[in-house]
Image: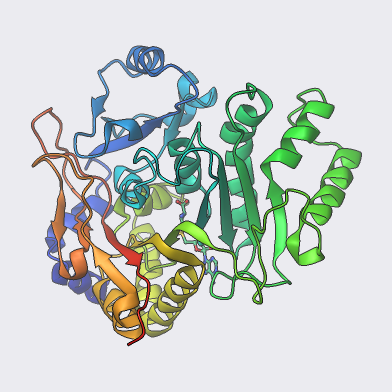
Length: 413
Ligand SMILES: C[S@@+](CC[C@H](N)C(=O)[O-])C[C@H]1O[C@@H](n2cnc3c(N)ncnc32)[C@H](O)[C@@H]1O
């Protein structure tokens, strides 16, 4: 492993040898995590999952129960599980779950009875957190807007939404309001702008699915119909049949109750992800140069940290501009770097004076939390590199950073 990358991990408090062993040694193992899809009865899903994996999934004790996160053995291949194929579980790291839990969407009465809760996910792809946001709000009137700059990643996000969310919209019962989920291909640092492009609308999608009698794959004419419909709905095109302003414009900024900025980062904390990426490389895990390739990605991003932190601050500022007074914004990264985490938050708070107030993250349950608190009530989750299996061990996921900020009204003196 590159010495500068090793040094980076050491400065984040991780044992160099642990990291090297973890990334380079195929036998190192740990948990992986699943989240239950609330559209299916949880007990039945858990029973089916237990039968499939041959062991009892362990609830992640420090996340709110309603988040329904479970740890299962790391060697489990999700793709082979029927519960996964049938959309009854999501594969999602528990630290990522903490970012959504931090928004506090599950708190009773958020947004008030009957009011539409509006959430913006400014870097939404591939979409695990976006789906969780929708799930946490099921039963409420919601408008969830996802933004990402990558077309390719938006396509993955659409697939995820089709698998989990559109099914729900199609089978909607009359009392339960159906979720409105929209995706914009846009630069999060300037969102919303007229040039931003609406690329997905859950209700339009549901209509198309219903009219094509549930066919999953769209033919050419269905795709053309979808394109036309999205154009009609796109606020940037002057249309907005839904009667809301999901995209807004720079002149009339959209106002959201909650904003998540899960910013582009050097991903050095997402060690499981890095390990999987490495496995996917030619030659498999542990084979000579592959470890270099993975850490080279991290190294390249760390070498460009100045640009990265400027982007992160800009995303956070844009998210804040979209937030209504009294609303909540969560800044998150899967990096262990102080420059991308605590320093970005500090610069942001300094820029906004009393208008941006960092607040404690109060959702963590009991003393089994793997998180450590830092300045501005931020939390750091350190990745566990060795297998820790057992109900009494602290269950932790990937390395992650979180800070929750509330927008206060500025009182002019
Ligand atoms: C850490 S990932 C987000 C993961 C996502 N929240 C999830 O849970 O699946 C960061 C994302 O930011 C996107 N991104 C990078 N620069 C951006 C920008 N200027 N505006 C919007 N998205 C951006 C990347 O394409 C990437 O999908």
